[in-house]
Amino acid sequence: MSTEVNLKKLVGAHEGLSDLIKTFEPERGNNVPQDNTRLVCQHLDQSKPSTKVVEKFLEDVTALAATREELMSLLENLTSATMNKTSSLLTHSEILGRRVECCQRVEQHMSSVIENKDLLIYHLQQPLVTNFLTIHHQYHKDLIFLIGGLMDIINKLPSHISLLEEHAQNSVLQKSNSYISYVTRIATELRTTLEEVITLQTLVATVLVEQQ
Image (cartoon, rainbow, N blue to C red; front, side):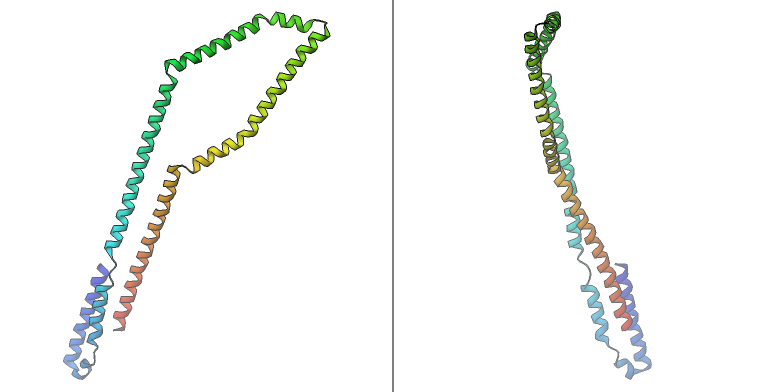
């Protein structure tokens, strides 16, 4: 705005010089292009940047940032509610009762194994080849089954990890952050472009005044 006022002052000064020229040299003063001076003033009034458009765009960006904050707050509340629900499920009496029963069964089984260890040692130390081979074959078969199951789980683990990463990358929060970053970058570019246009407008107006 200060640039436009200065340019108008220069144009006014130019009109004052034209009046002085008319006073001293009437013939030369009649040839001074008064219409061009008026056109320059009209150009300065008409070429002002539309501040309403810029203000509207900045309001949209501000509203988008506020929406982002609301979304973050909503996600935090949702996460807190989910954690509270999970905690309540973990501390539920019925669920805890089932887990205690399972632990008790495991404890009883381990106690039975410990109690029967002497019998197992006795069977393993027997010189009877038939019993030894039967027990060895059974353990060997269970070991192969266990290793096969573990290998299957290990082979499926990378695909599950990739699926979790894909879901994490495609989450609503990630998309919202990407969109807000994209809009912010566009806003920055538009502001830079607007500053360049205003600078170019000032230079053009200055050149026009100097040519007059």
